Length: 260
Image (cartoon, rainbow, N blue to C red):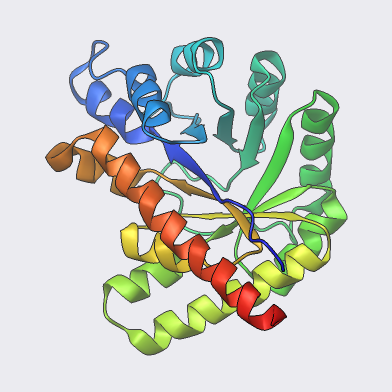
């Protein structure tokens, strides 16, 4: 009988730093948030070091790498500066994302198909340092095929369009976007790629997507930090962990039913 593997939760602590930077100083400390999240069940910590340092700063990355007891996933643009920082810090993983200074948050997936050579070089440098590299892309065949050709062992599917449609109550658009994710995850898995997902996920959408057995990790930040204002970070991470486990249990039950 097939057994569905557990699904990992990566907690993005960028917006703890956003609150800190609004006033300056060291409070609230992203490192403390990371430690609380790990104690509550997070399998890893994600932090995006942007070119403009609008939230996470270099010292945060250094302290996270030194102090946390779970893997650090460094979100980064594929620039010479960020590749150099990653090679120096040696996080467990690096997720290459698109970045524009004018954007409020990451607006879409990386154009891997249009940047093959530059990305191949960055992925090669990071991989040579023992860093697990993922590309943050839309669940489109051309982008998944490009990730495979570039040599990235992992993709992270951008779930923002699906989550936005679900939040707006646009059932038709949400269904179409989710179908694209389902097909994209299956395609990537068939190529031997490890599949992650993230952006805009809440309790309900995380539970739904966790039922896809191809996806082995969700990276979630803004929603968790927002809910933590009301309920506390530890409680919110535990609730997210429970939602994901419920979704994964459905995947296991579906697999068992198919096997009979």
